[in-house]
Length: 299
Ligand code: C5P
Image 1: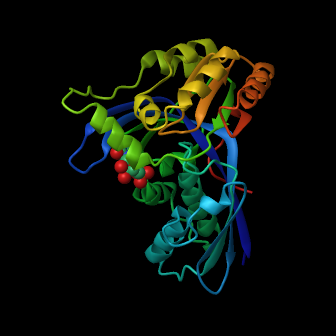
Image 2: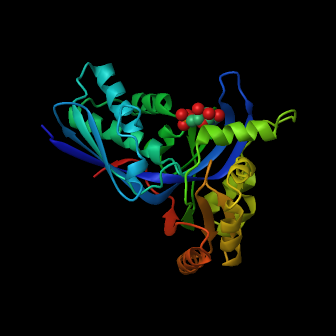
């Protein structure tokens, strides 16, 4: 029997995040265009006496190691469905920023699920895995599939999208995190009394992705959570301005933030933008990467 399984899972950026009004269940309907990017967490699962979570990486101290961790919840749910004791050691090598708006927690949930499925030989179908992911969180199904996808409902109902080329990105990590529920609450507060339109995916944006046209993508990216994230974290405006001044084609908050995303014309410019962002003193670190990236993969 396999003793240890490692799964690599990508981060995401939302190139469009259209947010509708609050639903009766507290969630918001979305038109969420996910793009997986080449920053990865690795989840390693090993048989153990009891369920245990450990984490290594620059942000490791901020990661909960109890059963609220999405990796632990994924293992417990798969075990429950197959009548297995979830006695495993889950180790997370964390490179995706924590509470950053890049689906790092979701990545760990999807990674643990795929790793436990392989370790235990449960051979759950893709649909069952996606169903468990959707129970764990709105962004978790996308972490499993990667590439690019349009998420509707609360973001968990996915349609794969075509991507016709490589996009070059810089991500600037902020000094502190932002809570996703707090950003949605701020969105509700700012839109109180206003008619929030139905979220709809932009056809121009989908065409830009399909063509691999960075200039066209830059003209069509949008994030309805950005005003709320900036309201809670006003200094992010300085980071966005620094990236634009350094030649980014587009600058936006990634998901609920506070990580900011900069679309670059090519790999060389991405390096220049990252250097300028670091020199500006408006972020903790800046990383260069590309998209699309594959979904959760057993190594
Ligand atoms: O689904 P997930 O657990 O990742 O969502 C975290 C929080 O983000 C939710 O509790 C909710 O406050 C907010 N959210 C939302 N609408 C969505 C997705 C998330 O309001 N479509």
